Image (cartoon, rainbow, N blue to C red):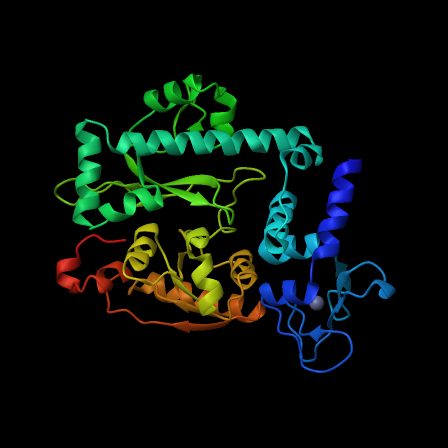
Length: 372
Ligand SMILES: [Zn+2]
């Protein structure tokens, strides 16, 4: 660890904590003396969050004298603020200061079995991404139907940039991934396969579905979300969207936002997030120029998601949920979550029965049929 310890100390020394705080949505109060702000981790009336930067006051750190009553070094701050793991937070900080993370220091970091396992899961998810992308272009009737559906939704331009793919079934996926040296256990860990019941062999979690890669803030694939493909008559398998269960150390439903990676630049610039429900609505909004759109992805809006957004410097969330009672209930539940994390919230009411995608494309409720 000796080399990497020095590297970490260098990294921490180079960080301007005030700029880092601002970058993560802290609003420093004007005035002289120690930089002081309202704590970004708890609600408070007077600012009790302080940055210690000068060497004479000890190690550089943030401190909350309010109800948190704790300190954060730069890495811990980014981890908690942006909901990142240790390695991601270090990467984030290195980018912030312009330092590079060398492979050597990457390896010297807590090289534990859990980390190796996590790395393998990330690699198998990335390999599966390649498989799903190829499968979408395959000369097969089900893949052709998936492509036709994307054309109906006017999403062909998004296939490459968003990595939209297609999951045909079990056999091809297993062959492809085993051919790349991955063990079945890794496929199960990555939620690509589910264990078969009563001694039957494992089967693919996503079958005959479009796939959308869920990425972390660095762009790595951390899960594959599926969406059913309607047949020519518009009948689609339920549930419409299928989210993997938890992938330990990699993905937890409700702790990510679809499109956050793609939206983060726009989020920082606009300080506002447009929140939609499903992957297709988010992608369509981006195609229409609303690059600060993210999707909740099948869960109620959570505190972890609110913290992710404030970690991108967001001040306000605008909920653009489907114009039905479920959408209205979701917004009702989301309001207190926003307020508790210091975000302001607004709601755009959509016409009854329409989702954002249909509104952007100018459809009427009668024409809309099956959306989302
Ligand atoms: Zn606090």
